Length: 146
View 1: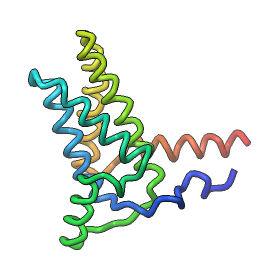
View 2: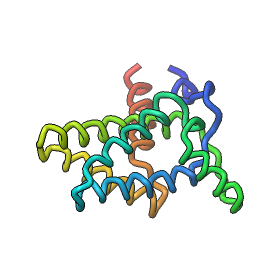
View 3: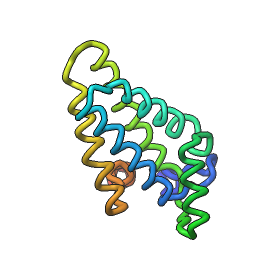
View 4: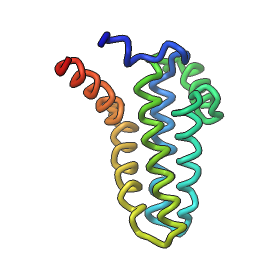
């Protein structure tokens, strides 16, 4: 294992502050899911997660808008895309679980929605990305076992 194996060099770096705005979007979507009858918003969360996590953050209109905004305000802070894309993959799975749960008439979707609400709020207010931390911890754990 080499440290740079966890980094994504095939995708241009992303702006961590733009991702804080994405966290605000995730928080809003989770709150709508949890506290309104508009549970279909889960599919917006899932679609954004799929696009940013499995394709490229740079193809996502909301990320591009937030990156332009933070750049214009002088808040651009570029980081490797790997950990942020991992966080987006988790959002995709959570959003899909929420949406399917809603379609099946199950309350299971409340669990991932609550997790998204809490962790997106944490990222938005402090800049701490729990999924990014988990991504790095996973690779550190792999190094200690090799």
